[in-house]
Image 1 (cartoon, rainbow, N blue to C red):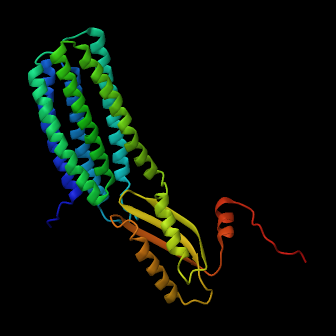
Image 2 (image 1 turned 120 degrees about the vertical axis):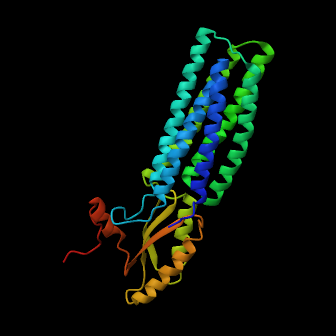
Image 3 (image 1 turned 90 degrees about the vertical axis):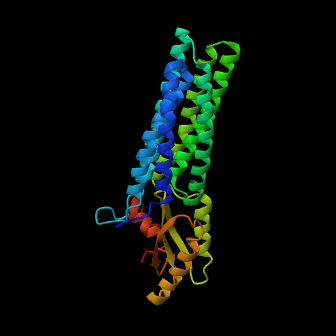
Length: 311
């Protein structure tokens, strides 16, 4: 049966196709000219292609529905993809630094400057439009993989601009050291930019709570309901696409189960409005009294603090 390609999967196809074109242009002219900065940019574009292809399959898996083996779905594969992408970006930065240092030591000369400059101008324009497209899809879907891809290509945009400036300065001054120095700077910037991607992916894998503002909003929705006495054990996490929320709320002991579910449904409708681009899995627990201390004693092995009088 035919299934429509989601915007995020389409975005990975577009980005991998663009990166492939840039690899061919930069690699051919980079090898011919001997420019470290241009060759570094070509290698970065090659990695972009591989990462974008990997992202396509990561998104495809993440969009699969939960099944008997994966009750919560496979959304966290997006976080794994983000960590891998960040690591690949870091390694490409290290390689660029290596090539720059090697050129500084060898004093090799950059040739074919005019074709190299034209190649980087082409790359700069194409990358700019790609970044705008990816940012639009990232804003539309709030997808971690696309956000990582957009950030990645944003760093490429700056690195391409830096390569263009380096080649222009070499063309005007004849000082080849400028090419290597710019290559060194690009490598450091690429490593720095990868940190944010890796951090967000690791935080999702470690089940970090949702943003503090969102958690506070959830707490406000629960506590402000007229028929809720109190709440406790509010827990949140995300897999990048779906937000998971659990909480215990204290209701009247004699309340009908039907009424309790009506209250929970009202809360869930309001909570889901806090981040409308995400899917939500909300699991409320009904308590006739506040049993937070008892639950913590069972989970953490803490002694119960009772105020019972000895007979």
